[in-house]
Image: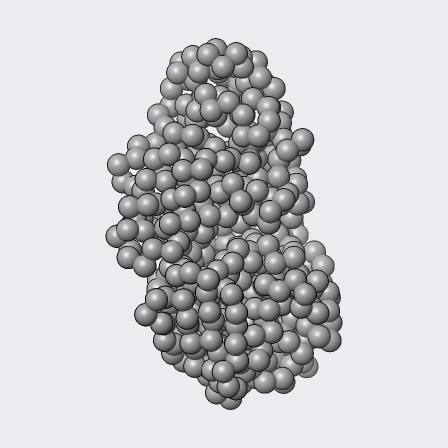
Length: 524
């Protein structure tokens, strides 16, 4: 029997696990050895790195594709991958990579310098014949790239328009994953349903709202994975995901609700935790409505009892956030910033000064999504805190991908605030894509609340071209002070990610990147 048929049958079998557990106490389903069943938080949007932004999707992509470089295990430090080494010019504007020899894409086509050129021109050149195959929402990561040149079959040179400190780190991010040009040419806009990379697992099938199946790549350049296959099952509701884990229907569960952690304390499970660069925040619409006034944005920060959220809703699995740069970036985080204190009286004073008592707010909340930290419970608690100081808050709840479709294009004309979470690879990424004036949604960025401050723009532009890390740190720390004062967001929490594995799973570790790397995992 083929692995694909085997995994299809195994998913159908384990799909009865929850019913078994509910109908017969103590009945536990057994997933097959060599096949890892992963409980994901949502259906992926696409399996094309050019089309996605959510860690939910990245967790699949990182097992199917490689980049020129990757993050060293357990760190955010860059090491070779499809490139074996590289050189950087003295002025920091030319990066020349030597490529790994003898690597093929899953469809059999060769990986070479021309394939690298195809990938980046497809992303950055609007005149490229296959530019229309992806929306390229994170093309900002490579906006400094002027040209990409195949020097020879195994050498590729990037020329930047200025020094760009995050360049190597961004190459290790999913936006820099290398796809098969032949597969893009064959499938066009449907490549996201017919992916081909060079990674440890090959694409098996995608059954909408049921499973994405990937299979062992026996010819993987870095050694074949231990697993025969991985099945990524979208289970949006966290309580259902927990029940499936307890019933044995899945082997690995990501983003465990804090209230469910106590369910997994016996020897049948292992709870994994890993700190990383995470920020959970509320985007405030600074362009129109009540939050166009800074005093009202500050009032919202004073009104929300973030310590209670962290202690009671999240049960101590996070820390209160003080600003836009998470403490995980120790060198760039401004330790002198203190979080907004919980001060409802000050919130009321600011609302009175702004003439905004009783302001009506539309609040977008998601049912579940990447790093969103029990979003419905969090949203409900935040609604109560805001109403306690005089706001009138109406919540609208959406499924994750629908939520992104509402929020990412901007809140103008739709909502006053929205939940959001980012897990980032460099202190440049989040503020550059979400807090600059030139990152408004109509310019391709994710500044969905339309915050604009010329001084913040200047600091971010200077920081990304600074080659000295101490200078970069100074600029980022100054930026954080201004952003905290301007309060374009309610700064809520920095989360410590978690996952649970069954006792049949070995060699699994969470990564500070928030990706799932499964090539060394063993399933008994």
